Image (tube, rainbow over all chains, first blue to last red; front, top):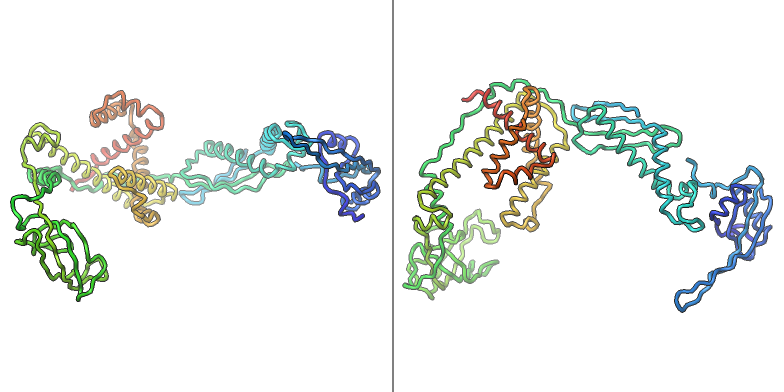
Length: 97
Length: 424
C-alpha cells in the first residue's frame, strides 16, 4: 500500500495524550485496509522516526439518532504506534514556548 | 521595565520600551488559562486541554492579545514615569514575543511642545468700542418687520401696480427655439425695476390680471447657466394673479408678538442684544489679535494630532449649527477633505493660541480658583435662566470641571495680557 494513503490523520485525545507522554505512543486514524506493517512503514518514512510496535483496532461508529432518524457514524481503524526511546513526532508535541 | 525616551522633534518622541520576560510569561500563562477554560476541542473535556495543544492551535491569537495588553500597560506606565504628555495615539512597532527573551517595542507619539513664551507684555491691540446707535436698532427693527410681512392676494383691483407681487406663468424662447428651464407656472415675481433673473419684472406694471405680455430680456453675460448667458430671449408672460406685501406696523402689538411688552422694551432689548454680540465679537477679535501677535514673537511647531483634533471639533461645531438651523447636512454634498484643508490654518492658530495661553498662565502662575468656578457657574445660570443647582450638576464630573477651569484660566490669562497690552 502506498504510504501516503495509509495515515488519514492524527488522533489526539486526553487519554492518548497521556499515552504519548508516558509510553511514547502516537495514535493515528489509518485506512481500514492498512496492516500494522503498512502503518509502521508509513510512520517511519513520513516522520523519520523508528517504530517499535504497532497495535491496531477497529473503532465501531456510534449509533446516533436525531428524532426519528437513526444513523451510524462510520467505523475507522485506529493505530497506536510505539516509537523508539528518544524519538518523537512534532505534530503531536505542540508549541515550543 | 526599561524605557528610553528619544526626542525626534519638539513635537514627537520615540519611546523604546523593554518589558521583562517574566512579565510577558505571566501574561501568556494567564491568557492560556482563560482560553483553556473556554475552548472545546474534540478528544478533550472542556477545560482539560493541555497548554501544549492550546499553544499549537491558538498561538498567534493569544500572542497578539498579550502583546496588545502588555504594550498598553507598559506604555501607560512609561509615559507616566517619564512625564510624557501624549496628544496622539502612539504608533507602535514591536518585535514579537520570543520565549525567554525580554519583549521590546517602540512607540512613537506626538507630544505637547514645551512652549516658553517671551515678549508677551505690551502686545499691540486696537481699542475696540462697543457702540450701538439708534440707527442700528432701527435697521434691526426693519429687518424684523420684513421677516414678519406676509403676501396677501389683492382683491380690490386687477391691474398690476409697482411693488405688487405677481403670480406669473412664463414661456421663453431664444431665436424661436426653446431652451432648458424655459417654462414655469405660478412663479412669484416682484414688480419693481431690476433683473428678471432676480425675479424682478418692472414690465408688468399696468398689465391686467389674465393678460399676456411679451418682453425681450438679455441674460447677463455672467449668468450661471452656460446655455443662455449673454443671449436675448423672448418671454411670454401670463399674469395670473396679484399679491400685495403686508408689513406689520411698528407698534406695541408688534412688540408683543416679538415677546416684549412695549415698543420701548423691544428697543432696549434689541440694543442690549446688539451690544452683547458686538462685545463678544470684539472679544473674539482681541483674542485673535493676541494670538497672532504671540505667534509672531514665539514661533514653534505644533503636533499634527492636535491640529487634526481642532479641525474635527471646528467642523463638528459647524455641522451641529447647520443641523440646528434645519439643514440636512448629508444632502449638502460637502467635500470634507477640502473643508478640512480650508479650516486647517485657523485650526493651527487655535492650537498655538491655546498652548501659548497655557504657557503664559503657567509662567505667571495664573490659575482658576474654586471661587472663580463658582462665580462662573452663577454667571452661566443667570445667562441661561436656569437654577444654579442645575448648572452645578452639569459641571459635576471631573472632566467637565477641568474643562471649565481650563476655559476660565484662559479667560484670566487673556485679561492679564490685555491689562499689559499696549493699545493703539
